[in-house]
Image (cartoon, rainbow, N blue to C red; front, side, top):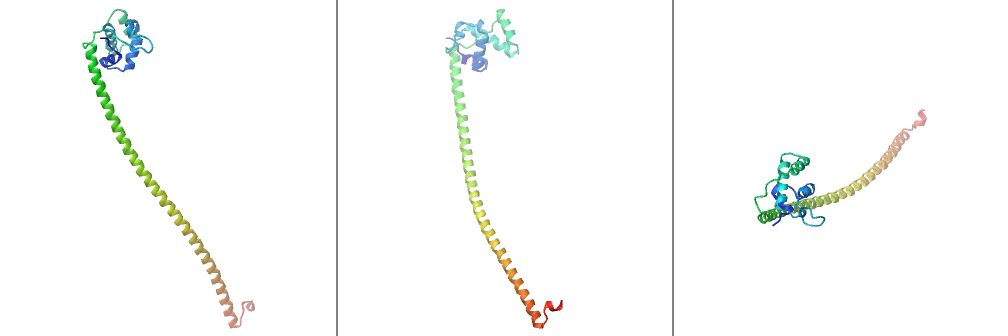
Length: 186
C-alpha cells in the first residue's frame, strides 16, 4: 500500500500544505507518483518516505532546504516509517474522527455562546426600546410643563401690569382725596 499526503502530515506532525510543499521542493528525489500533476492524488512509496524522513529530521535540526538538497544529492536518506501505510491509515482515520468530534464540540459551544449573546442583545434591545419610550413620555411632559410655565409667566405679567395700574390708580386717588395732585407740587 502506498502512503498519501495525510499520512506524511500525521507521521511528521506537519500540515497537509507543508507536505505538499515538501513534495514539490524535493520532487527530483521522489517517485513519479509523488508529483503526478494537477488534480491527481499524490502517492508515496517507501523510498519517498525515506526522503520525507530525512527532510523532517533536518528541518527539526534547523537546517535549510539547501542543506537538505545537498544531503539528498549525496545519497542520504531517512528511515522508512515503522508503521506500514494501512496501519497508519487506521490511526489517521481515528485521528480524523477525533478531530471532527472536537470540531463538532467546539462548534456546538460556539453556537451556544452565540445564542446566549443573541438573548443578551434581545434583552438590551428591549431595554433600549423601553428607555426610548420613557424618554418620549418625558419629552412630552417637558413640553407640557414648558407650555404651563409660559402660561404662568404670561399670567404673572398680566397680573403685574394690572397690579401696577391699580397701584397707580390708588396713588392718584389718594392724592385727589387730599386735594393735592402731584402736578400742583411741582
